[in-house]
Length: 114
Image 1 (cartoon, rainbow, N blue to C red):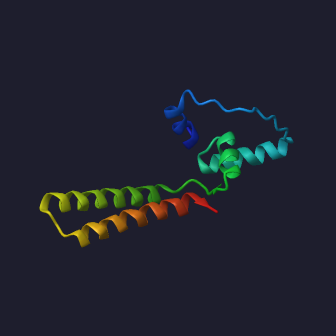
Image 2 (image 1 turned 90 degrees about the horizontal axis):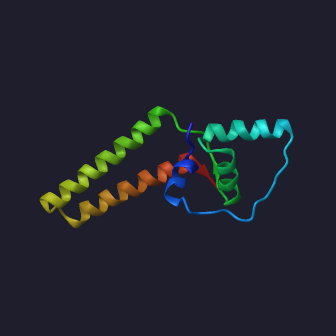
């Protein structure tokens, strides 16, 4: 299974991480880290980096949530394209932008918590 950090890595192939830090865990700690990171869709390294940067990833979203977010994305894009084609009011365009912002906020809140 490919984690989010693995997908992001594709765009940063030349990025090297220094310094290298060796962390020793007990078998139980490693298993717990593996279980937690697997639930989030991140690798163990990705989970640790995310946590260090101040975000605690939540569990991986359900298929229903992903489908709902995809639906929000499609609808907001369709509305925006209609606004451009039909030269609809600035107020409606702003409402669509707010709709998009709320969608992104919902995703952020679902995936992470501070």
